Image 1 (tube, helix red, strand yellow):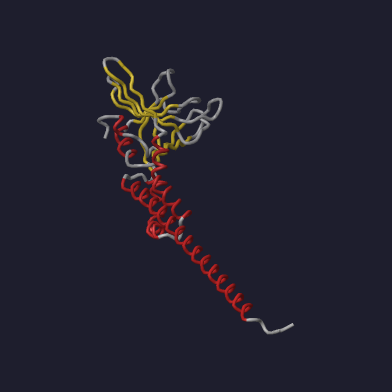
Image 2 (image 1 turned 90 degrees about the vertical axis):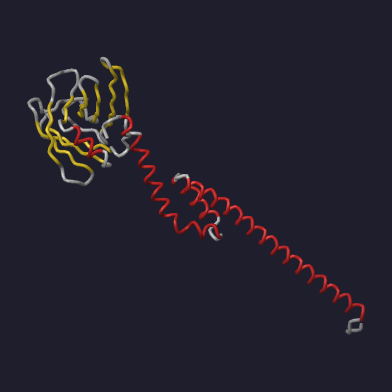
Length: 246
């Protein structure tokens, strides 16, 4: 057997190598084309999310902007759009949290308009953040009410579900706004059994300071002994519900 390949065998071998090389080149070209197409698709999808993110910011919808921005960074982190959005996303997230908190506090208030005498009574009421033991059968939340009555005029008062205030002859309550120092305010408990209520005399001052605060705490005396402190998240108060108070 002749160990030296024939010219035909060599030609066949060279042809096979050429074919294999061509196939490899074609596969590499296809791979690169596919990768480029995928990268372009990601850039386009990321750009669309960035447009939605920018539109939400323009509309002042910080919560929606945060959603779009977080999705953009999570799904398309290596895109131009992600690079453009990332520096401001922390600020947008902070504003989104503030908006969510504001919405939460707004939902804490209850507003009412009812016919009273020859006019209409308006009120804005909110419950304390926690239940308190005020001498009733069980701990219960305390209610803060701002009222505008056609005959009794304006007032601000606390209402208990159980127990009673120790304030029939008048007393002082301590009122603090946010982290400020507590201020003493005069209060009184009307001699009536219709409601366990205690009026704060400086309702104008209470309203004025409350409109600038996020939280109000009121310490008051109870017949069960000592004092209790009710805390109210008041930052969501809608002043338009009580015309003329601002």
